[in-house]
Image (cartoon, rainbow over all chains, first blue to last red; front, side, top):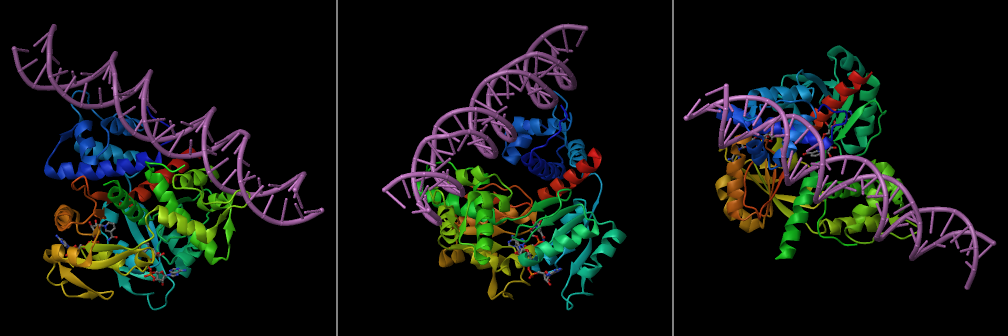
Length: 212
Length: 212
DNA sequence: GCTGGAATGTGAATTTTTTAACAAATCACC
DNA sequence: GGTGATTTGTTAAAAAATTCACATTCCAGC
Ligand SMILES: NC(=O)c1ccc[n+]([C@@H]2O[C@H](COP(=O)([O-])OP(=O)(O)OC[C@H]3O[C@@H](n4cnc5c(N)ncnc54)[C@H](O)[C@@H]3O)[C@@H](O)[C@H]2O)c1
Ligand SMILES: NC(=O)c1ccc[n+]([C@@H]2O[C@H](COP(=O)([O-])OP(=O)(O)OC[C@H]3O[C@@H](n4cnc5c(N)ncnc54)[C@H](O)[C@@H]3O)[C@@H](O)[C@H]2O)c1
């Protein structure tokens, strides 16, 4: 039952499945049922089967899913079967943490360019990568075939960073700065904001207290 | 129309509204309609009115919402009208970036304790805060009235960190490590994983290419 | 103090997402 | 080769979230 439109929530869950399946693999589990995977991910088992059904049939009835095979299938479904070249704009606290994070390249998102406008930072080497002046963005995007731009500048600079990236021909942008930006409709834009998890925690803690 | 159960998506959107409303305020806008706010947040205007209706009536018919008043009302709704004391476990790349991030205290989440198990890090001062040995967690949680625990340890240590936090009497946990952990049901647990944004970007970029 | 234009709050309609249920497929064991 | 225990893929039902539509309220201007 391949399908056209995929819910955002499904993408997020598939990412979780990969994570949990990788743990299973490390533990030496070869085959897993939707029931068992569901429990580990705190979701309903038909949810898992439905999510997978958007992309194809990956299991064996009466048996379950072969862990390694399923990981590969999900990655392919998510277009994560090849590496993506990323460029990071704004090498501050957060930018540095991301540059040093090994998981990016392990997951197929390879940060190949790091840009900043601060002359004191330009030329510095972080995690084997030289910080380059933002003005060189257009040249570097082409040279390194960058496809995804990561914005970690202060919020008031995010729009400018986006403009540079778009002008340079990037295809998608992940914005970590807490400000809304506008880009042409053919550019895929994602906002990362984990504060809502803090709000949610605060909300539910106080709510539970109130119930007592 | 006050209500019992609040969708998670509503909480996340309310956080966005606060962000965008703060921008409006900075620009000097005093009154805003749901239509205009909706446009800035890329959502439907009745979505906004519905989200707010879960908590009360904050607008004036025929006029709109008073920006500052609405910010205050949403914050109160989200139980964000008082500060929350947080403790961070695992002062590595990410932990440091969070400790240095001013936005936390500005938003009412004050990181009062930083813990690590690495003897080389214990005693070090980061952003005016001394890194303390994880073993002192129970004592510090009580001393500093910590309510929310932030886990930024490597994934294989996340469960242990959670156990410490739970044992020490924390009320909620935000886990930045990419591993599922288990905690008693009265502890509110949130997972932060921004990789799904990268997967979503990759997926949609390739999908758009395929359409052409 | 009336009137027209504007914008909220909300019940109803629609759409989307999740869950349940079960027929179809697989395999171990006899 | 048949049988029963499993577990998938999928259709149908249920639940949840979003959007529509409009009665209700407010205000500015006359
Ligand atoms: N630090 C965190 O934990 C954290 C968490 C969530 C969100 N954020 C957001 O991420 C962004 C970065 O945070 P940070 O703590 O790293 O801030 P930071 O001030 O440490 O770093 C910002 C960097 O961007 C550079 N910069 C500014 N304008 C630029 C431009 N036009 N082009 C290229 N580079 C430019 C600055 O020189 C600096 O190096 C902020 O928007 C922040 O709100 C940070
Ligand atoms: N760096 C990033 O950009 C990034 C992004 C997303 C997720 N994460 C996740 O966040 C976590 C931290 O990432 P990082 O890059 O900061 O790693 P890191 O290795 O730099 O830091 C981990 C820190 O945790 C400490 N630690 C280990 N076990 C501990 C324990 N039992 N109690 C207390 N402290 C302990 C270590 O001493 C170290 O200081 C990882 O799980 C990582 O996958 C990181």
